[in-house]
Length: 75
Image (cartoon, rainbow, N blue to C red; front, side, top):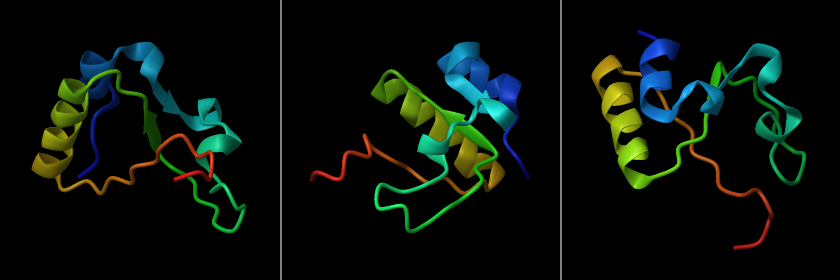
């Protein structure tokens, strides 16, 4: 089952839910440009509470989640 964009917007706000053409190359390619993906949704949470709520929905619906950081290549 796929997460509902409207439910996600309630958590992070409409401006922080990216779909379709709003998902830029930054979210499609890793820092080294070795791996390319086409995410269905990109979320930009502003707090750990928002991350927890997103993960709770994803777990409930069985939706896989891939987490990315700042993508600077520096650890």
